[in-house]
Image (cartoon, rainbow, N blue to C red):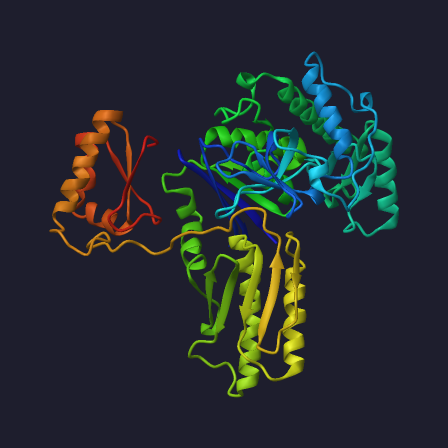
Length: 520
């Protein structure tokens, strides 16, 4: 399988697309220039509310909504880690060793959070679920630092090996190897990618994770004005102290394999960061990292835009004329399977079974593409044959086994519904694939179409006065075709000669939308 990663860096956001055999599999969008409460970030937060009925507290970490921390997410070593945090904050001269704090009594699985935390208490917490809809982030007090081959956990002491590594000899080798190189007071989870790795690679990554831990505690000890968070929080003592890797680098860390054949980036700075990271984890593969310098938008060039428009709408088609209708509610996602007007078989039962099997493939693809999490209800086409129902269930389970997110699939109910739960750690990808009416621009009233080019020229004058010549103007392909009509006397040549503006087409724009860029 050929995997490729495409990174589109724009002033307001970074978009990341993953394809497998040229088919779009995942899309991630990250806003730039704003606080990003990403999974893995570590905060020094303050307890704002204690909720005994929920056995949880709400913690201020600088987000507009208070974050949620449940008793079961405190971790067994909560008391010890809290004592260590207190020592680190009280003595800012150096980062204390974990062994410098005496082990406290473990926190049991049954207990009351009100006995451990009170309003105003401060503690180190880590984001395990990003803000979704009206809810703030979800937190854990059991800190961990994830690398490509292992996860470092303060005060865990144990070495655990991923259950996906099946060979007993390799499990024993990794456990003994990591046990011999890990520092005192830390635990390690060995990830699947560590299989057959040499001691030099694992030792190098372990040192990097330890360095990140020391930087986190060092940031905790700094005054607020020296914090790594650029925008001051509401409370001078509430701040970001440990930042997860950039989303692009994080995706590479979790997904990079020898199957990757290309990583394309349209920004020089991001290209340099990715190249540096790939050099560190897989030096032999650094040649696949390439900077895209084409004039056409990177997502248009590699067919990402078209696949996003066809695959992320309310209705999604699949083979033989079938289609899915995907709806989101506050509580769950609902997916309705439809066969369309075409029939594969004359027999209704066999026809329903075949369409359901085809739909299962597209449903699993959609769950990953949109990163849908929580509860998913699938309304398959009704089937009476119990054998067909069981085969469909087994097919869905097999397809979902390739999903990295934690999930659970239940057999069809007597109403033909299948329930799926899938781990949700960040909001699902939502994109409005409908274009604004090119005639009225959504207003319901029209103006003479001849005025549009005059309006564009007014925009060009304004932008060149503000930014100078050399701008690039992106327009819808239909508008581009109109502006290039006539060649020598075309609007494209006129604007190039008179204002120094280069005209390009962009499939992601609406019919009468425009976008300027300082990149020529």
